[in-house]
Length: 452
Image (cartoon, rainbow, N blue to C red; front, top):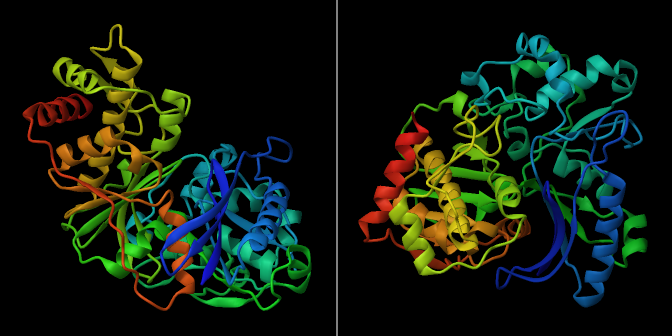
């Protein structure tokens, strides 16, 4: 079966063809994804994305017949649609700081961390805060909303005409979901939103076939099924939930680096350090932590990997050239620290790249420690190809790191929603903790200064 996966990340949007027989991507279309910075507030360019999605489905279907469609998107995003399925308000960009204007009012009504597993986050990173701000600032438009949708399901609505919500996006630091009762949180009832919330459907649910107009425009079979879809980090986790034996951890890398621990050590999550309770595609709570590592990598390197040598690595370890948190503030395990370089005079590009890779690995190791990560760690997404990241992550955790062979685990996970089988995972390259004590000494020096 060939599944077309619509994969909308914060930085890039993709449509990939996944062959379920081999669990491999066989074709890919990609564009940059940037918000529209215009009135009434910064918002997602859904019409540009819609054109890209339809054009990609049409092009890819000419290459290989598409048997089904699935979808995955970034979190912290939702849509308000009217009775006709049109947007009542633009889809707000979660990096917009407008919701902070009403922080005091929102804090008075949001549920405690113990109820939702949601930390209080700045800007629009709590979806509940977005909806709260939109209702207060645009009451007339908000009143036209007939349904509140999580972001993957907004796209599913446009493709099928079926309105739904799904737990991995609802459980992604929204304040809207109680993972312990598998129901909407007290915020939803306090704000009178429950009747607006579209029905909750499992990620694997077949919502229906694509709309006739979509079939005509793309050339797809009108009977092509559309699956409900899920949040992108949980798409990365799904293949491992189905195939791996706990304990294990999965690190999903993209704009955000999201660490998830399955069967790990019991720890008390620290809401002040951006730990949270995600909800996986099976509906179960998953201790998680995150930081904006992909964004940091782009800012620090202009998005380009650099050439490096083992001599560069040895020099960085010996001099203990350290990049300390945080390049992106406001989230992550060190949300209020200013980034700082130590012993970084006259760095060559290769040595700078090594220190940046080590910083990202040590931030990830900190996240894994905070959520009780145990067992092997699988790295999904772009960072899986960074050998220095994987080596330092193995050194810092003292556990093996497995680099996923797929370019994006999100596409594979989302495609699995169309499968009834259990995947035979291709594990990828395994990195054991380095024997050289310089690696552990470097990590200890970084942690000591970062914790000061």
